[in-house]
Image (cartoon, rainbow, N blue to C red; front, side):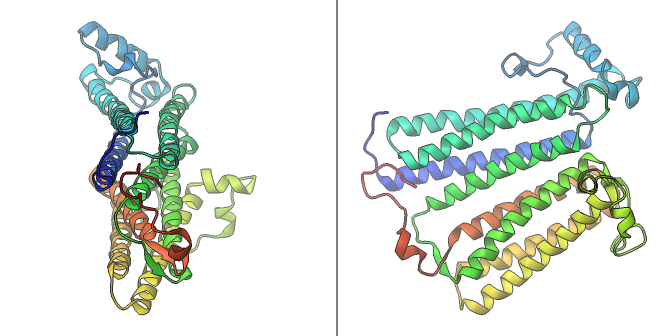
Length: 365
């Protein structure tokens, strides 16, 4: 690509705002995906047509054709038998909107990326990472169809294994986009003891693990069972015989509703304790600065998310609360990512430098 001279600050700001916009779109896709799942709309479109599928049915005959395809699925026969065409249109629009938003993310990523590349604003190191993100986004589309296909043959819902992958992959892309955007800020990272940086990164990882377990629980419809707190099935800790009822033992962590919900609760407690301990450590270690405020805001966000989770469980997963819970999970993930990226172990800055481009050079990371 031909390099175009530009103020490096302008180039850096433009690329950063673009990545933030992409992350915001991913957040919206995840929320709409959650609504699609909660309204049981995800199996309403039984074909994967990346290009021709962009147009919805345009005539009465087209709608009848789509409805007939849906009527051949196990979900229609076992769950929605007798559904009317207007009712089908409601779930169709949720799934169609989800797919269109996913396509929009791809376009919003690729076109500006190519333009920035052509302008010479993106150097080789950053370019390679962004191509990787685009590849992961394309893979996410295939994973989405792989998930839907699991509910079109012998079962009336999608596989919880595939649902969890379908949720975690965009979360990983979301984290990478925010992390990269933060690296383009024209300011040095904050030097902190290594343990603080390690616990901050640990919060990002634990948040991703919790999202994965939450997706497994959602796929099992596990939020509709054991709707008490703090007890689960009348106990704080269920018997090992119930937690390990399935053979082989590993299946319990993916298929046993009691075990998966217990794991989701325990991971939430661990996340809350780690966030609080991290905030206390930062406040005691650092006299002032953005690291303190970032750690405290993150701890409060995790506490709010835990409260939403408890409320969602107790009220048996109403759509509004469930969406708030899912949306807040992504907010926690974003805050954890921003906070962790800003921190560097003491001494790392001297070894690595600021990582910012010199005047007149392409943005290099």
